[in-house]
Length: 166
Image 1 (cartoon, helix red, strand yellow):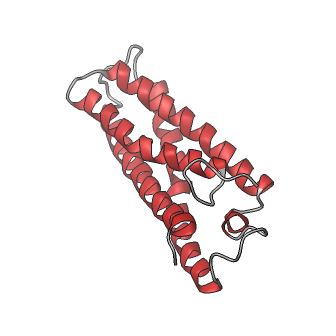
Image 2 (spheres, one colour):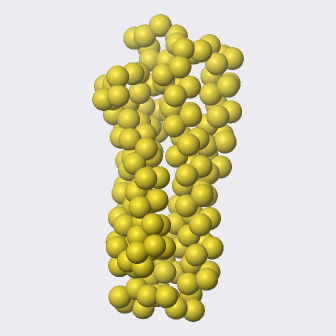
Image 3 (cartoon, rainbow, N blue to C red):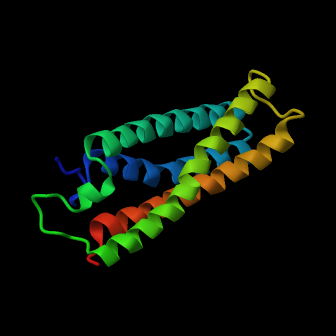
């Protein structure tokens, strides 16, 4: 099994997803800035759709790699050719972090798909404020908070599973 590019025991796709998570929040903040303070609705729309597509592709490739190629993250952490890195207690600790991460990671695509699909359906083209704006703003903030928590908990999981010396 090949290691990723961040210099630890993680797989290539884990490193790609971690890098994507680290870039999502700043890009999201820029998108929110562009719509809130610059009133650049078209840029906001393009950035949000791009983020949604990138996340969908990255997470899909990640899940295929994680489940089909490696058989789960624990097989990457404790590779057969390496000495056992995480003990049973360590694995339980990391598993608990993963469970918290999964709460946000599972709800994020639901919020994003709902937010983007309703926006595409309800906003005029080119995008401008309308009757849907109030609901979109609420769904957008829920989505933004959720993806931020997904990113933070994903990075915490990655740190403890692949970097920290437990």
